[in-house]
Image (cartoon, rainbow, N blue to C red; front, side, top):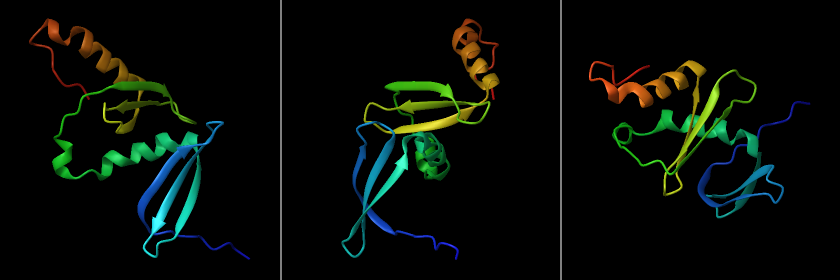
Length: 124
């Protein structure tokens, strides 16, 4: 017999925590009836979740500029791309999949872009 999928219509995030071993993220969610459910996810999937976030930002937020507090560039799981995670001082984070060529282009622009006004300020 096929298993039925469970769908939780959460109304609020009550708590988010990492297990002691760092392998899982536990999200305690509240529903409209006042009940809670704990969703346990592998920590390794957080990059994929965060990569989905920028596609759903409101149009007004797309023009907003934030300071970067920290960043991490690492190999993407199961893909030749890299994952760039940027975090603001307020703790908000977003992750992006980049090709090695895109990272090289950004590094070139950062290193040599200010040397000449004739160099394009955007490479994509």
